[in-house]
Length: 487
Figure 1 (cartoon, rainbow, N blue to C red):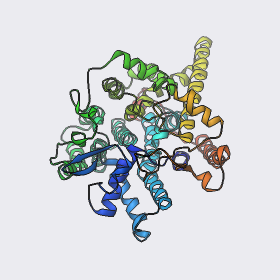
Figure 2: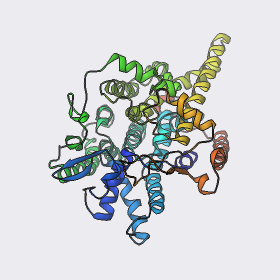
Figure 3: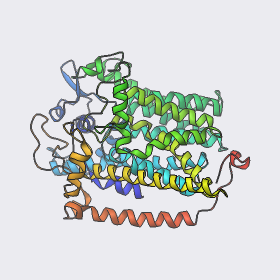
Figure 4: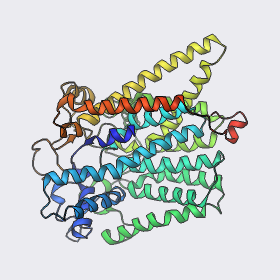
């Protein structure tokens, strides 16, 4: 509830990437077509084939937006023309249900994954909130992109599998859901095959390859839908939207713009002030010691998470637009973030164990570690919240976006500043402010517009604190019973 309230509080309006996806939603609902010809003037991210325009994005995020937008559209009498104010509310409603709700649910599964890896109840809550508020999951849970949906689908599927290894029953329903989620993640972002593949191998080893057939069956529907969409829009089931993109970059390199990885880009990607991951969310550095701490007891799970993190970091260092365009950080890394958080949970467990140690030096080291983790986590949450409140699609002209744009704007009370609407003319400069938050809809502005959100966060945090104090230890897993886990 805390995270969903935060995600639903912001309407970020439009932008080329979002508009390209939402154009497909409108085309399907309003025109019963896949061509976005009637709307494409609001985006530069499109594909052109046989004289028609299409979204050049993977369709998964748009698919989830279609039901809520259709409900809003037809319950409003199928307005023609669609009024800009109504369209903004309909887009907000659709994005909350299509991206915000799955992201909040996935945060719970990040906590469940942490629990399966031995975290205590407070550690599970910290993992959920650390991912949901202290990484790019926060801004991208308020935007119609595919990265966050892919991350959510992947981590839910992986958590369900890890729970099976820890003693949960591998029911047909669970396996069908796992397969559907893995396939759907690919429909949201094609590149997440780098993560889905090791999860699938892990799943086959955990449940057995014969039983894994149920997961394969679960993946048939989203996979068939994706291949069918490719065939209908681009002429072949294995023809990607990027093959017809109006941009040249996706058609360069080995495949979809991929080149040999660059050491210079890797350094910028991790610690550079422009879009460096650890520059804006420094607490994720604890994924490294956390992985070392977890490796002895959870080797297979650490291997999957490490493959996800390292695979995506290397991949991101191999593509020319490594910064992700208008973004609050290296956007293409979003799908691997919950796996980095899962690894970082190993540090939580080590600190908790060391604080109970009879050794005074060890307790002192653990206390210092707890302080450092807390400080870096606070910095990460602050950066992500400020970027989300001001404008998560940070203009590429800012060389140091947090110092030059995000924090100066936030301190001045300039929030929800985007002037790019969901139905804008992409060839014209920005007009009036198109983004808003729910506080603004109550007549508030600036810092005052965030006060209702702060009240919501405090209320839910108090509720969570009470729940954690009353938490009843769960039944020990097989690893916990043998001294290899914790409850």
